[in-house]
Length: 493
Ligand code: BG6
Image (cartoon, rainbow, N blue to C red; front, side):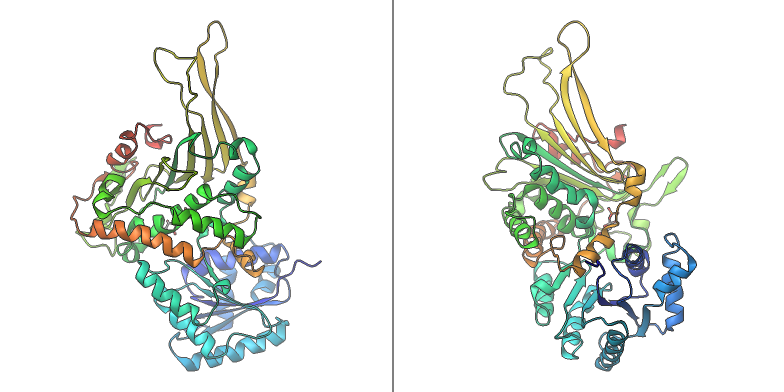
């Protein structure tokens, strides 16, 4: 059976950064692998006036590191068309409709349409409504909508946005992107859990002491200060990526590895996340903002000096905290997390710390044995490690901790499919497993809103961590007061 997918892609925001950095390269990768062949076309839209030729040049430029040959790149780019478009102007949708129909016939696209909204979320509602009202949705093929984050800035705005979109698209036609769900090792969480009895049997509060999730970035906000200053780490990373990772770690085994079953379990896990009382927020969470520093002779700006950031900004660029999941499996197990900009390293990893043996026969001067820790390295390294206590070679019964480790080779990592490539292919296949369901978005906002409101009521002393560190010292205290410590300490290595 041919693996070729048939579709017309309409990209709103076709001149933008996301389209150039992620979407065109991902489409090209799918083209190289034969998932896209003859029967596909792409319409790029944005306000600017571009010609098809100019647009194709931009597309070719965006894939130059990947191209097989200049002819192959040209052949790929010949499927791209540009349409200048004002998203609020109804007449422009009529032109888009005509072009869509022409391309549908030219490339035999069977009425399959994938609309990609890679632009400001304030237009998501109006675009989806106009697509429907102006008859751009077909009766004969599929109509799917891919939406980039942020999906609202709190529960109320997300609900309003969802209602607007749902007036034109059914839930099963909406694909809300969280690019973390396309990452190789995030997708591996389910395999580790459900394909190894050794772990699944222990994946609960009887054997796990705590779970630590770190999403650390070494870069600052770069040119995105305008967006970031209204978002902060809470909305930018916790509401989506971190809670999604937690839902995968915490969910019950689904009955089948299919979208409906997996999402049902993820939703249940997120609904069991404990909602804090406003006065409890400071017991569970810590926020920070990076200040200037000099690293290896390089002067790094503080957040407040970044472009488009208010000089007295109260926006957090770091958040750490503890999440509790009040269900049978996880009662009493803290899920610690931290994420921030301008930290020591770029790295995402999950450390699962198991409880110690009930009686320590290898007690060494009352020193407890180190816990067994399963680490899932998400990026840039991909792999696993497991720390075990063993006997030291030689006389006596002294123990040492060994690390069993598997890391994907640099070549495997470099060749593994990019998150956007996987997610676009999933969408073409109608598989929404790795996209967030509205109920997940809703639960996540309800959790985050409480924190945001509590924080917005207080003025804090920022900045409170220097660039290049692992955030404010208080982030360590979130764990130490429970008798734990961060397993991964890149700043101390
Ligand atoms: C995005 C955030 O969702 O994720 C960015 O908006 C952040 O601020 C990025 O830098 C991190 O993604 P990754 O894949 O580089 O870990």
